[in-house]
Amino acid sequence: MDTTLVISLFAIIALMAAGAFFAGSETALTAVSRGKMHQLAKDGSDAAAKVNKLIGNRQRLIGALLLGNTFVEILASSIATSVLEVRFGPQAVAIVAVIMTLLILVFGEVLPKTLAIARTDRFALATAAPVLHVVRILGPIVGSVQSFVWRLLRLFGVKEEDSTALTHDEIRGTVFLHHQEGTVERESRDMISGVLDLRELSVGDVMIHRKNMMTVSADQSADQIVRALMATHHARVPVWREQPENIVGVLHTKDVVRAVLANRLSPKGLDIDTLITPPWFVPETMALEELLDAFREKRSHFALVVDEYGMILGLVTREDILDEVFGRIPDEHGAMVQAGIRPQPDGSFYVDGVTTIRDINRALDWNLPDDEATTLAGLVIHEARTIPDIGQRFAFYGYKFEILRRQRNQITALRVMPPEKTTDAKDRNAEAK
Image (cartoon, rainbow, N blue to C red; front, side, top):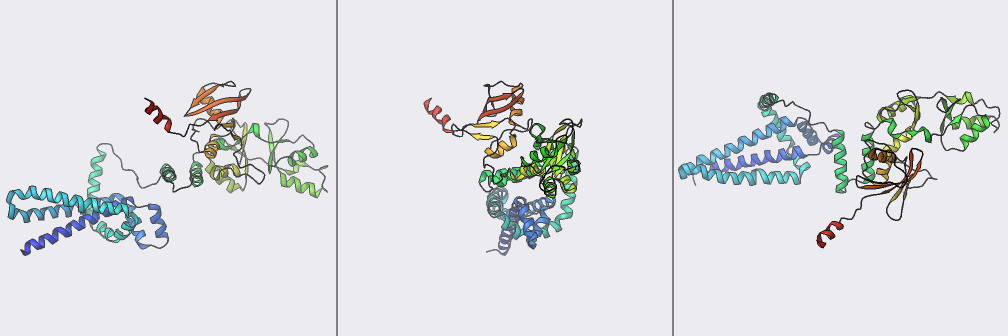
């Protein structure tokens, strides 16, 4: 066999192997899990640290791999053409085009990329070190090409953006995707989603409305105030004077108990005013994430919510924020079923109108929108564009709503029928036709 032919054959094989390396590395390094690589690097993996360095600048990485892959494939085709041209003449171009297309497609692209997809993390860790050297060598050329390309794109109004930042929506989408695939439990999905929502939710979305607030009047006697505090399970209770909207402070139940114990177990003669602490007011538009930081800074668990005019709207506690993350945790005397939601034998649910949509979605794994309304009653009023009467029925978002009780202009109870989960109804209708 001709020596030149043998050398050319080995050169083509080597170049094809290099092309397969570039193609597989590109697929593996662009599909690798950034979170897993960061954790491995944190655990001391040098290869994972190299992977993180490479994917930190994806444009440079992809540019270098494409440059290397394009160069070796063109060089391999050129060598094959020069070898076959001696034997086949002008027909060598067509022959090389067919043969090299098949070889590059199978062995240079499909095979290495399929392997990279099947063993993404392992492939990326194995190729990180040599790819890093390739990027360093080809970096100046790639940088010049990228600069030229971006100048062309800017002429068409395309601006460079940071595509490496993982946004809240991407994290949320990843979590929900893994939940659908069965790799993330519903409870974990809800907790992660709750943490992400802290930045988007405001105090007004989770506060306890003033109609449901337990308050005491400073104009009452000490005995009446103590009895009212003992009858509630709240640790802190707002105190008003002259009128309920005039909140003058907050009473801590434990402070009152200590005072009663120090007064020989008698509330008579207690100066309640000395036990009242100044109130802390926060706007309803304040983000929950900001409020949580404020709670930590002030070392407080309790705040009163006001609107833009300073009117009392309700109250919010640190536990209300934690409930958004972990869900409502019932105490030893509480029921396991979400308060305000009562399942019925026919599959429907009786729901109190003041129950928040977020609590309903979390408890029943529903998908009712909460963009325009906070409570279920608010959602029905928003969609109906009116205040419904008792007995009226509506259908929104696949759910059916029936008004059960109404007090003045407030809907207090509804019956909700969720969408049917069975999918064979359409099949039976199709067969009947």
